[in-house]
Length: 339
Ligand code: ISE
Figure (cartoon, rainbow, N blue to C red):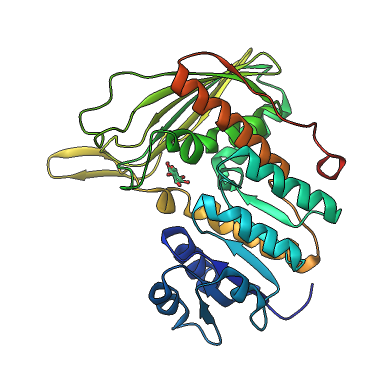
């Protein structure tokens, strides 16, 4: 492995980007933040300021062209990912791109085609649950086969509250996209059809937001995946997944942290958001990306995984609108690059 740290351009310095800058500078090894870009020039300057030799930009291409940049971490909003990815490809820079790869399958397909034309993988998609200790253990249990064939995945995905810009379709494209990737990865099967049931929205949901919803997926191997998505549950950040198989069941997210006694109450504590619940997973994900990139490798969730997630979510949004069962129809088969 080269001794010089990997110089990274971080594109997008909002909540997730700023958290990754903190992680790259003070948690993980082998990396330095060489440049940052954000549409908000002041925010970019504030983030770059304390970091030695880090330059601040508003244009992602300028950050990628800055001195000392070897790789790119994209953490801007989903709709901005496609152009940043294509720019990184033009420069031959390896990328860690936050989920979703792109919110729409059309954009994801263009990214997939561009990477396929290059003939080599440059992208790892930031599906961090694949790096969470409990999910890794669940995956190992399912792969070992002792529990038998999976029949159901029962998933719950709850956020204390949603940001002001959140829309009903983002419940699928921005939130359930995690379960889409986790289910494909845990089961090793594609999702083939989707339906969405919508109860009367919570009176605590922002005006016009269809929250919560129940999303049901069928899989190629005959399993069923149900996801309760509830982005204004009010009480905390809770992500659970229970696999029910022919000979047993196993779950993540049981909340086995410290038991607190305080204020006349007894019980566990809930994290309030994903940066806290998945902090270790993000650390492992980014360290794995930096290590692989320094070795000249590309690992982890691929552009194909990002494309398939976008295709499934598109079917999910159509099911959300129509109330019908919608088949998942990718435009192509998995290219050899992603075998
Ligand atoms: C957010 O963008 C995330 O990725 C979180 O993990 C998810 O829980 C949340 O619903 C999304 O909005």
